[in-house]
Amino acid sequence: MNRIFKSVVFTLSMILSGCTDAAPPVVLGRVPDGGIQPQLISDREGGVRLLYYKHLNSDSKQGHLYYRKYVAVSQRWLKPIQVATTAYRNAGTIGRASMALDDRGRLHVSWFSINPASYYYSRSNLQKSRFEAERSLLTVDLSEVEAAADVAVYRDRVTLSWHAGPLDSEPARTVFTMTSVDGGETFSHATETGDTELGACACCSLAADFSSEGTLIVGYRSAVNGEGRHMQLLSVGDGTTDTKLIHQWQLNACPVSTNYLSRDTNKRHWMVFETQGSIYQVLLAGKETTPTLVRAPQEKTRQKHPAMAFNSAGERVVVWGEGFGFFSGGDLALQLFSSVGDPTSSVDTKGLNIPDNSFASVTALQDGSFLVLY
Picture 1: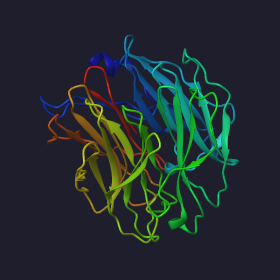
Picture 2: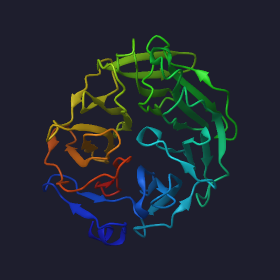
Picture 3: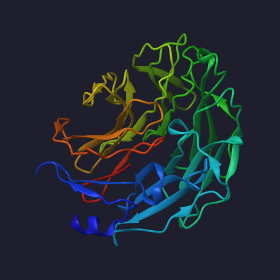
Picture 4: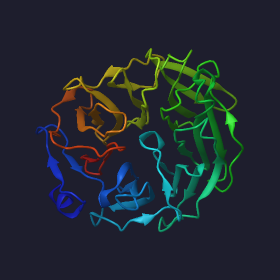
């Protein structure tokens, strides 16, 4: 782990923390290049893929997406690769970009530009050395859309999922999908897939992934009668669609929340999300899905924008921010869990602040430790 600590270079210094002798080490670091909104994926070879957004300068409202790869053999980050040719204005935490990795190692990236208002897509070449010219998959109406879409990959299927509908009538909103069956070469037209009786929270983002059997799952927040801001799980299979209530939250306002899907060592999906200002986690496998509180807030602040990762031993980490405002990143918070689900002593994150309009991300390294960027 010391070699990793010395070889990984970030804009700010990193902190290497071991909780206890039994707990896996955790590496904490800022996003490189002064970037925000990190997305982390670990590949089968033990490498780590990073996607992040960076403003053109301190005064600009526009910026670019960048991709970097961490090479496990040489234990270093490669130079950043710019994803798209055209700078765009980021829509904040709910407008975050999305990244997925297919079986051949090709990266698929989607992002939401609000000027012009569109869902964009690009994919890397097989060598991951560059990205194709970006494509506008869908021009959107800002009176109906203000959150990003999420990209998911299963074999040659690439799916974009989002919610849309009138912003002033959230009960009338629902989830839509757009699918490619040729690895991102072409995409279908938008298809309504959500339950129209549930609505969709306009300024909350969703999370999408495929099960190991190829079922598309989408975690999103509903808006039943304008106040049922419940976490829902939408499952879309071959000719079947099902929606399951995960957790209730009665609120006559939009909480500007996000959720995150992760897989454990048994390829079972977990979801972390916010309800009433606290972060919950839930195993989505089986008939019973009972969310549990990750950890109570240390102060009377709001917990928001969580992420989760599992290592090869089945241990997991949940990260999030704690703060007051919708747009402030808040203080970095982290909770470790053992392979049997017991909380273990957490890493000290005191004094580590997530930048505004950003969040933390986590992934497992090949040696069982965790990397957290914020």
